[in-house]
Image (spheres, rainbow, N blue to C red):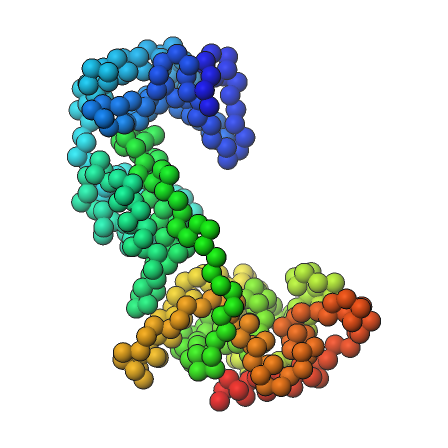
Length: 399
């Protein structure tokens, strides 16, 4: 955004929360005012010396007025035209600073206290520091940034680290490190500028159906990882319900006499509750769960006060145990083909058809209500048939 700045315009500039605006001054080339919804206005200067573009923070408004920013920016611009770096002369800026130094400053000066501080630290220390720790920051180019993301994108089948989502988060937070460095006058440029997020536009097929030997391996692996995630994954397999519906299930939803889990209509996004008949094995799993004092949630790490969280991490642990079980039988076995938790639900629906369960019953098992005229007039809920179908499926899983 270009405009001839005035004191009044600078004073009145007030972006919306979460918005960030860069305004180029119409008088001094390279002078930028960056304003954010956090009511912070920073002056910076973009200039080029010996073919290398740099960006430096000059100060913050209102401590630095428009006239002061223009005066300093004019000096920087004039010296840059003569091939002189104003900041190198001014404060002996160390262009040999390494990425590890920038990372340490970022963690201490910005990330400290953030809700995701622990996650950010783990992410960057696993995927970025090992590769860039000793690199001078001026040597970290856009080419290196793209190479880093390509290295992170494939998931390591042995450790479960990496993957598309990890690569996206690496881009987000590594770019944030450089953006912070620019604002602090430590870094010239952000190598992640104009580097697209990994997997942008990529659509993964949503038609994965696990084979019976695969679903049994997942079942066995879930039995090895313990509470609360092990029983949760096994219940997902036995019921074919969505992750949120089982992960957030509450004991008040349970009718123990009828051996049914009744998901409220408000939670299920339906006009009526969804009843899940529990097979003997599914009911047994629920009966063995702890009865919490602090709350009603079946799967919890806070004594029932809140539902279990950390599904992504639990999925990685489950994936490692699945691979371990496969390698016990065949040390040279290929990694388990890519799958997501929702594939369990699709697998249950597919296998019910294979086992001879009629279409209407199988659809009701996974909570798909009949549509059209059939759904309007046929209110028979097929509880008995659904229970028989899930008992049949449980026997198939248990072999």
